[in-house]
Length: 232
Image (cartoon, rainbow, N blue to C red; front, side, top):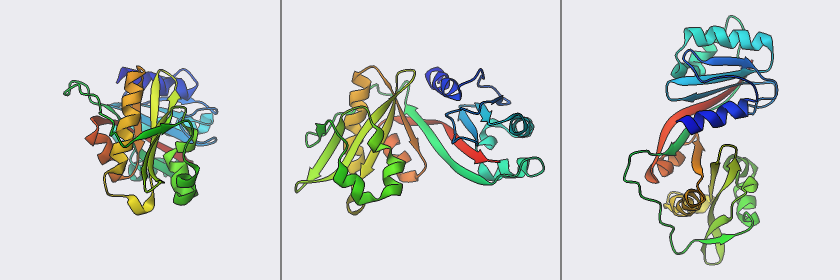
């Protein structure tokens, strides 16, 4: 957990510490959330919060005194807590944050022999899934090789990761819509996770859909926290 906390503290862009009640800071340039929003990241039973201005930070401090760190990343509970001081106008998340299990069997994922790597993300697959899915996957932003699975010459699944601060590898996975629910995400993700571990990086899996969290769990990831952004 210490590596994960160090990462998100650095992304906050200001001096703030994970705590319970949550540590709150004014950070207009925070990378925990979109510009002008408040961002909450929970790791374990502690959290950090950034707000774009002093008014927003005070509202979030009041909420943090009322709610547990787990409740802070619950949109309904946070809306109720902020309703009298800074009503929530929009929400992104929550997204689960998953990291490799510690103390498990210690095994490294074994890439499927059908998986090939390429220097570029597959443009045809990104175009086929549409803008929303492509953006959600983050595959266009990877800095690792793209690990691809082809069927009949068509790329049907791809994975990779972006190198984040603190030696973190932020995972990206994408499967063609007509090939989903066949276990292909796990096949390509296994190759990307193995590559990150071999490079001495800490893989990080951020996911909202249950199906994505299930793939991560099958590769030895454990849900350690969550991320929520709110516009107030």
